[in-house]
Length: 165
Ligand code: RP5
Image 1 (cartoon, rainbow, N blue to C red):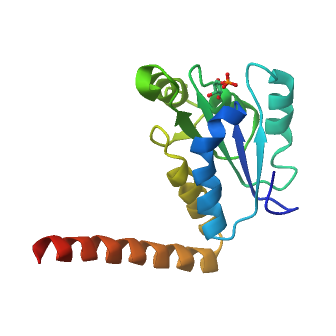
Image 2: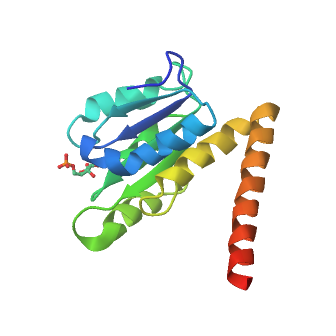
């Protein structure tokens, strides 16, 4: 799945069962009109394809990878070990352990192989972080992010007004 033939962000996950969490990343990218692709690339069930995806991602024009996985969540870290691109890891909570297993599997990377880990089920922030990465080299996109932040401010201010009334 993709929203463009020239995606700049890859959203990948260990299983299609991760999609209900991961679709929030796609939604955030849609809001900023960022072209992306979506795929299942399991570190454990399809390791060779996973390595090929990571090794080729920058040559295909991707600028960042958002990788979600649950349980023994090795996908983000393994991708980070074979791609030069920034990898944003999304811990997907499974039935047991409240996502702590996924979080710790993703966040505890050895020095030299960074993964920017968002909160458990934090796929929306993963999408927004990818937008910020792209905005660092795109002034128009940076201005869109400024507007987005102003809107967040307005919403929070309105909530405060309602509570004070
Ligand atoms: C992980 O195993 C996936 O990322 C998923 O969160 C979990 C379970 O996968 P399924 O058994 O639902 O395919 O690799």
